[in-house]
Image (cartoon, rainbow, N blue to C red; front, side):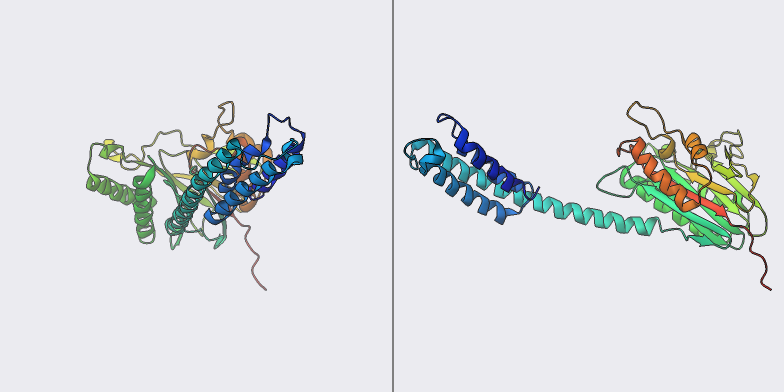
Length: 360
């Protein structure tokens, strides 16, 4: 883009000598300032305007270049071209100044969004005890890398506790809700020994916050989530699913969803039924891997509108460590959607490492 004005002028020079008398290509030099405004600042556009006016005069006053036996430097048609070029150059200068301001504003917005992202979604540790963890976050918004998807991993005396969730809605309200939920989880995870009680306290916190916000959509401000607990001294994983896509177990080449078959309500809707959540316990042995994800993964569509076949892809890839697994998922989602994700996407991959032999 930065060399486009030069290429534009070169094209004019190549065309001018071979065009008929009635088709003076030098008039198209009027577009040089606008071409320059796409990639350069106001000063360069102003200089390009002066250059275009002078070069038009050179071509008009040079018989061999103008395709005539005599030059027409001050012909009224060429004078009108000089004036039009100057006017277009003035508009191009204003356009370039406006573009520079917009680019700086956009850079500031991205910087603030990235900072908020790091505060809200802190990178999970790559290893906690005998667990290896990796995280993935993809935002559907091109200008801001933050949304309503959330995840967290907290080492506690009860084991490693994981959370992944998806806030209903978009925008600042979704971000505020995600921040409130993460704050509640981080606070409760350390001192609540029972996983189901932990979920209940987070649910109460989210219901209280929704009531404080008020409005007519209080009952619709909900969050789907999966709470997971992996004790350090047991080869099991405990899962409480709150209306979220079920985790996927990758065990000895087998890929399957850990779905209890019992429908569960999202957080902030549990008050509608009695005992809305239940704990499911599954084996989790050394070498096993757990994939938690938001519905942005499975709802990714290709050009034909077909949903992303997550289970099929996982079975095709075979066993992969967490880092390689999420890297493959990242690249495959972008390729499948042709770089046009429609929803935010988050994922957590957790692998239980083989037990190390005791030191002699």
